[in-house]
Image 1: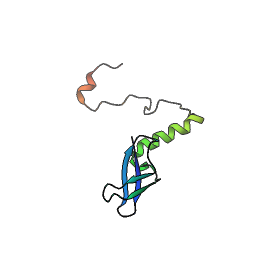
Image 2: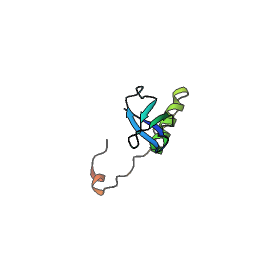
Image 3: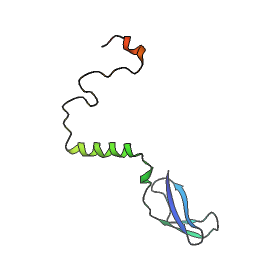
Length: 93
């Protein structure tokens, strides 16, 4: 189901949900029963979190020209120290 916007001459923008591709060009306004014409608007692009947008952009860029890595990301050659003192006594892999 997708949300479509219709503009009523009296009440302004009215939102309605229909299956994708099945939205009519006109809709009766639920408030005043006037004919509301369908308007084409931008999708909710701001609803995505910025880290997700950055990850999707990075994945899209690397599809054509993959990034070359020289080391495992996040590791600097030594294992990170455990934050809990009890973890320090555990055997290392």
